[in-house]
Structure formats: structure tokens, C-alpha cells
Amino acid sequence: MEKVSKYKKLQNYLNENEVAELLGVSVKLLQKHRWESKGLPYTKFGARVIYSEPEVVEYMEKHRIETGKDLF
Image 1 (cartoon, rainbow, N blue to C red):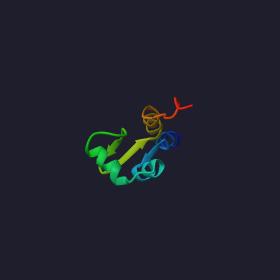
Image 2: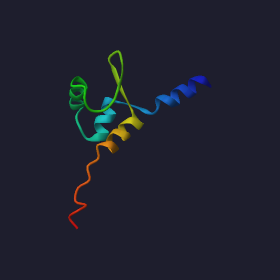
Image 3: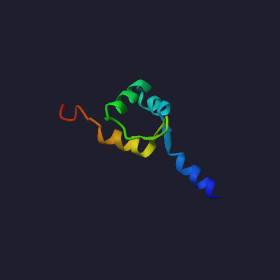
Image 4: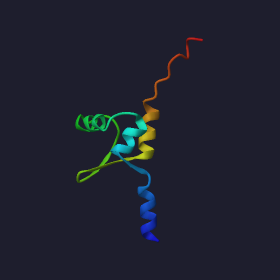
């Protein structure tokens, strides 16, 4: 049972290919942002980079820009 619960916790993580596809950006852009210490928070295990899905969503919500509200 313990292995199953640990696996369920890891289901909330995405690799850089999944995040790039989700956001519509290149993997190279994510790598550049990591190198420049900006952008999405991530976790690194050796060469493996993973992103917490809830943190990706939170980052997107914090950086949301709404336009056109005052036009009408």
C-alpha cells in the first residue's frame, strides 16, 4: 500500500516535455529560464527535471494578464 500512495503523489509532477507541450513553448525555453533562474519553479534529481503540476497552474494564474476590460 505504501508504494501506491507514493506513486500517487508523483502523479502530480510533469517532465519538461509535458510542461512545454502544455504551455505551448519549447523545451529549450524552459531550459533557458532555468539557466537564468527565472520562470517556473522546478525540482531536479540528477539530470531529471520535474515540475509540480499545481505549481505550474499557480504560476500561470499569478502571471495572468487581462486586457480589454476598460474598452467596452
